[in-house]
Length: 392
Image 1 (cartoon, rainbow, N blue to C red):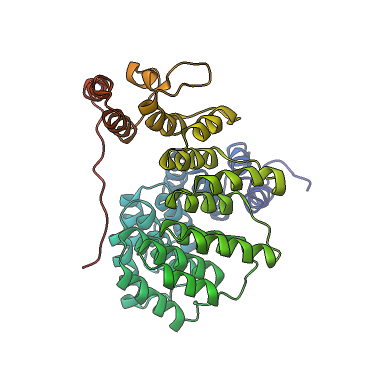
Image 2: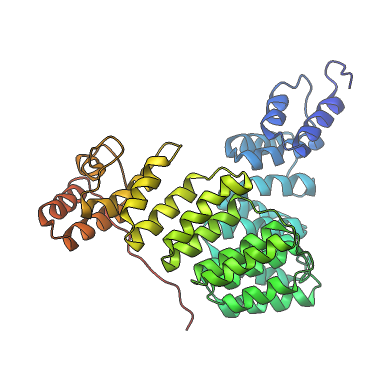
């Protein structure tokens, strides 16, 4: 494409093409190099890149530029929605709500952006309330993106009744057969404690070649301790010719860890690279390490710890030390890693320190257990209280 100096049309097309191809950073860079005054279409083209990069500063600057040019709320609905999307995805819900309330016309994109922003910002009850307001307002009909966003909120609240209502709503509006909605329903039902309904939704999905669906239902079985069902689903997936990815293997290993099948977890970890050519992630090693520790296979845990090819982060070290500390297991170079936690060389969360202290106390190492607790007090590290959502 040949460009003439100061050609806003050329710049707009260039930026739009980069955004569509997923090159958000390059699109923003091109926008900053423009030698022509951007118009509303140019701004609407670069704003999705800001949302993807979570660049709230640039999004605000573009919004301010538009307002200074006389483009108030309602002057360009497409641009309003693009700005709203930036605010919602960057977590600036106050600005998003102010813009949303001031819009004279709101379409499904406007409502979905608000529901999504609330759901992803830790305000799931507000997201559900916003969805209800959308239905009662009647201004726009929800689409699959809206339903998926509110299902994420329902999964966070653990409200099974709300999940069933949304499922019924999706079916009535002809969205129940959408693959992305089905995957969200599987996840929501699993997190609301209904593994059976999660599997039923999966069973009715039209596309059994979708890897995300398989991974989601296996994870649903895993969190409910249904390791046998997860392994059976994996076998069925292979028979259908669907090739697994790292997320599927992580769900399988987690399922084994949940029921204490350390040997099976080790077998799956080995098969990832040997049979399927998939390099294990740090999360795979951490999960297998945890499975070995829970099952008391401390030699296996030590071997996994030594074989890890990537840098060990605090989760890996914490998982290892929480079990190794009670048996005086040593690290790769012979030192006791738990001492590095106590000395402050390695940082960890309150849960790791509490687990190390508990395992030491159970092994009769009271001095070491007290040292861990003293370290927590001195560094003002607290263990967050665990909680479980139930519906009454």
